[in-house]
Amino acid sequence: LMEGRTTIMIAHRLSTIRSVDRILVLNDGELVEQGTHKSLVARHGLYRQLWQAQTRHRQRVQAARDAIGQVEPAQVAPVEGAPRPSRNGASRNGARNGASRKRSAIKAP
Image 1: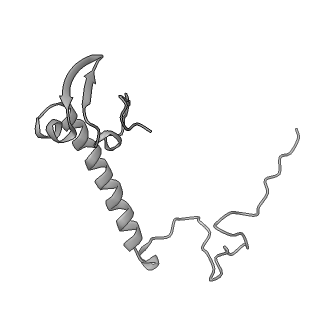
Image 2: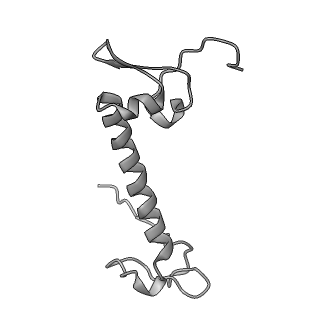
């Protein structure tokens, strides 16, 4: 769709524009840097700071996801007051996925 055309992309997620021909970096409406992803990361400017911040965030999210996947059920501490699931996945009161079947009654004054 964009091949052979000049396309302007505005992106907050820098991985979206990583492979474009030229990146223009604006700060408070002023052009502060321009170049390819590789050349902008090689400099110590605003683009590199933003790229590193987003990369660190993605790494932390992935590490958290990996850690969750590696936790054995016996290692997870129960939450106080939460229904405990039975062997078939239902809680002790018969509701599935921890949902309660209790209904609140609202009394008229």
